[in-house]
Length: 171
Image (cartoon, rainbow, N blue to C red):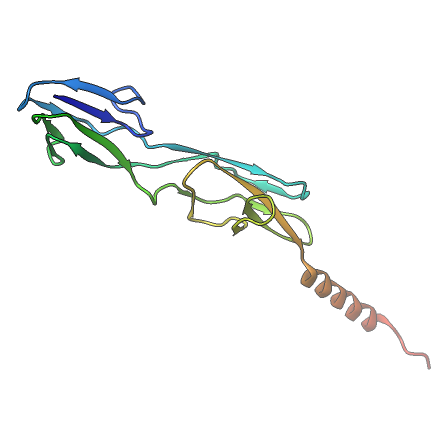
């Protein structure tokens, strides 16, 4: 029988490819955990917004969580030993679905409120510096800045108050 070990995006025994092993039924083989899950690339696009950002995680990697058994044979997850059965079997690496999280860079532009979007103008919006952002594949984040009208109105009110306070009424 054959055992196929599939690192499924990680690296196992020095390889990112599936590896096959042939033994007689009842033979055992120790199987170590793979070293790292799939790496997702993160890129940023200022999107002609005139904004600046600092910090930039460029990738995240999901850690290994378990082996998934298929076909015949026996898998002992405690001892990490495969026992060959009468037919072919597989072990496929699985990775944590929630550990590919990161913090987005802080993005800013004077008199604007800025954040990030997945998609140039209409995708999911994330606040500047948002934490616990999770991606499931290579992703580009686009700058999304909007005129902060409240900021401008507040400044205008402050300036008007200052002008009125210094004005004198004629005698």
